[in-house]
Length: 457
Image (cartoon, rainbow, N blue to C red; front, side, top):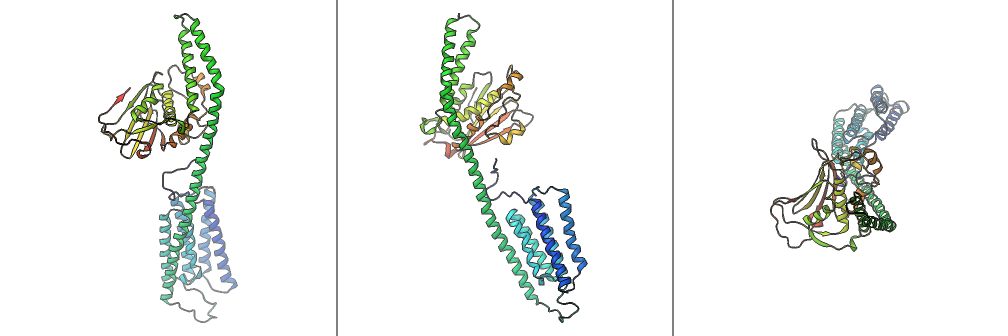
């Protein structure tokens, strides 16, 4: 599930289904045909029956063409729906021209397309359709074929409605179009806002539930894996002690011991991610980044951390395990997939603080870009530029797809917004941006200005 927040709430319109407009037009065609038949043959009034039925048949032909050429489940764009509703307005104007103009009580049906637009389309489209309906109503008010008041003059001379009365009908119709259109749009907007808020709440709750479940799994993993990791460490030390110093296996055993200790440190970190229990040390963003980068420097990948030139004073950030783990996971993934180098660029202004992590690896798979950060989405096992990588061995390194999800959730808890993109050609690699509002992340009081540019490899 995803929710786009590229536009403010209330300004996202999801379009009408083509099937909905087709069904509504069939209903209008049925009603128009029935009205023509009843007036012509049951009431005995004389209508230009051929022209009226031709206008109705044109709508039927359009409906059949739309049904045959498009799937009914297709959602129309704002412009496509506007054109179809504009046609309905023009078709109704043609019928009213043939049957008395504004003196015909069915002139009120000009409201229908505007009401549909107000509930499902953008305000701009609704305003344009309302203007078209008002203009068409004015035209058929001035120019129309006379309304047949009787058959062969059996009711005498047809009454002539005063121009002022017809003007009043047009004015009432125009006001109704404006008032009902605004009212319907306001009600529909409130419904959209409520549905979007509920969708966003469900998304956040689902992510929090995933993270809560993972908290328990992390604690259980730390408990269950603690003993075997301790045993591995003890055995590795015993083996190292029993081997001669020049034995070629000494380095391998030392590496096993170091990696086992690293696993134990990671498990300890996972069990202490609750920020309420973590020490909130104050540290500049440059020190925090060095704290994050330090564990990943000895893997054959160059890591460069760069500070800006001429920026305002350096932010002071609260050091907490959730923030460190989230940034550390992003850096670790960059190192894992990089070919030679990872660049970390920090920038800040009076309004925001940004950290960008870029690598020169293969980049994110295009088909996963929209899903990155969701649970159980992973690109592990895909091609990576790792020295001496074995493709067959790489197939067995499929991840669970939870690392980025956890990191993203923990960083968003600190007020961050994350973006995942690929570097534009001809460059290659992935880029992850983390952005905070400065008033959210910066806990400094009196700040001291910082000049110059620093880069430390």
